[in-house]
View 1 (cartoon, rainbow, N blue to C red):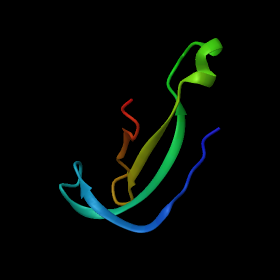
View 2: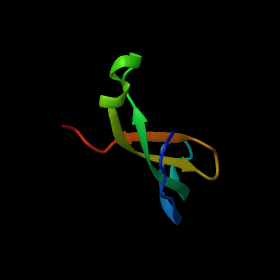
View 3: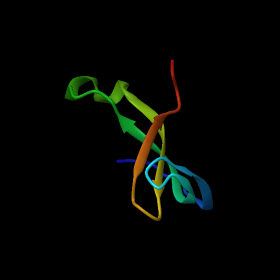
Length: 65
């Protein structure tokens, strides 16, 4: 289950479109571990950005600890 918090009307550069386009930007809590017994300890926040023109999605880990 992912928690999200969307910001409306965000524009940023799109590597696929090669120009600044509107993006749907959210913060999601993702589980990094594939091991079920460690899943509860491997949840990290990610910034997820989806281009509203071409659909390209990028995810960036927000906590580099």
